[in-house]
Image (cartoon, rainbow, N blue to C red; front, side, top):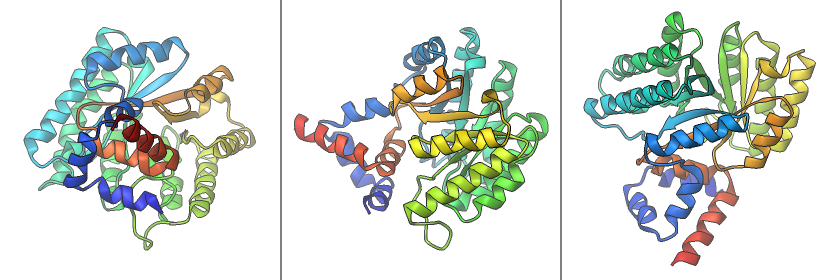
Length: 308
């Protein structure tokens, strides 16, 4: 029951100020956020590569209110691409972007987001990597999928994310599970109404399995975004049943969560990618991590109490 409350708080300026000022916040934020700058995140990419892991990098920040802020977000990703190019890390690191950060919610937002994200996708392709479009709340998805389809005309490796808690997702998965596609499946971390999304955890998990099966049986490249040991094991079995080799799909987990499992899956021969967020505007991302798992909230609460 705490999840929806936390998700509501992620949009509250009052809660943002309170959480930001709490004595124990930095300790917990540092668990989920790799740093504030490119300089801080590059060593993490290098370390992951040394361990046989890959990463997807997310410059956090979604509350864009002006076109200038959207252009700044674009430029932050272009700076990241340039650093990866110089260090020859492109093949080990893709990027994840939220189109809201590129101006999707502004006036003429669809066109603005497409115009801002295209140069990032183009620059990524030039250094041998790609971009995945993150899913946000259900009102943004038609725009996201349309931008995804447009970008794939020139950059077919562009990926997208689907969320098992939405009723629409099985149909989306069937449409997307085509040759050359890259699709990440996650449970979903936005507060959605019962009219569009499952509310019960068991139903969300069942939908996750159904969608994973659709992706595994398709011709695209599934990316399994989960920390749940049971769902990971099911995904492995579905991969075997579908005749997939270990390099024909991958697992993705968040930076700072179940790090030993990252290493274990990579050692088994799986492609394992660590979703690594960085930047100064961490609040919305951080609150969704708390909402996803009660243990994260307990960890945060203990940190505040011990620092207070």
